[in-house]
View 1 (tube, rainbow, N blue to C red):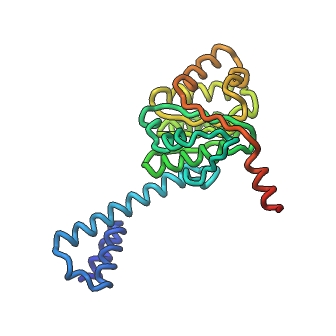
View 2: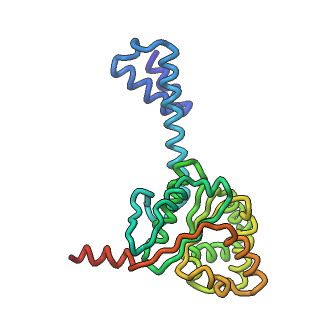
View 3: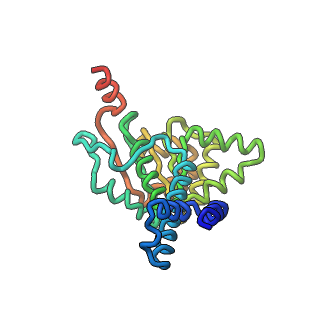
Length: 246
């Protein structure tokens, strides 16, 4: 009977429940539980299993650049990172409030790592998150225009609680990319959150976007009320390379 019960649990995809029931049987502890205690144990195990699988899906779907965690962020004096600010962002209340985060600094300083760490934390808290390299995102949307899947791609982005646009401003935006960015920002304004990383200081983004009227509209929606993280110091990648050589 127990074998049949376990088989039915697996067929119904109650994997956590089946695991808990099997472990209880193998340990010979089934008789130590009352009926309600055993049911509670199996339901709790199923709940945890589904929650963990959901987190796993969120992380896999996000396609982060780095497997980064908040605990791995290095706080050195020259980087001028406010640890309290990072810990507050890690609580992801900014997502609940539909606010944006702007992370700027020179190449290799750790912008992408911090953005990925916050994004990973968002996934752990159940928020749907996606990471994009800015250049690849705009290229992908341009191809989507050509093959008729643009609306589908924009809709997929719109459904995320948080999107990360990494390495923004490497190249000035052309008309198509400017329009795509405007559509993404307009869809998310006061509805969902955005993290943008850039080597270019925020006060130069107007030149990167181009076309004064549209740049004004985009920046008004991105920058107003956003959390700013400005990184300083030497390239972390360069430091790691030197340490490995030594």
